[in-house]
Length: 82
Image (tube, rainbow, N blue to C red; front, side, top):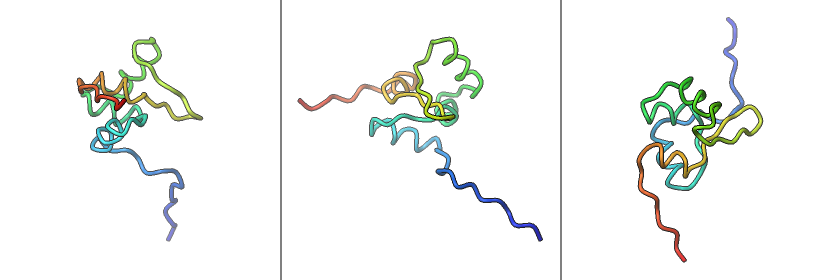
C-alpha cells in the first residue's frame, strides 16, 4: 500500500485563527481572511493586485497585515497603551 505524503509546512489557518491572530497584531493569510469576510480567495487576491488591499509577500505566501484585516472585518481598533 502506498504511504500518504505528509506536508512539512505549518498547519493551515482557520477562520477562527484569523480573529485571534488579528487581536495579537499578527499578519493573516489571504485564504482564511477571504472566508472570514465572505469573499472568494481570487477576489481578495484581485483586490491585492489592484492595490485596493495592502499585503506582504514572504516567499510564496501572501499575508494581509493585522491593521488592514481589522478594517476589512469591521473590527474596532484596539488602543495602544502609552
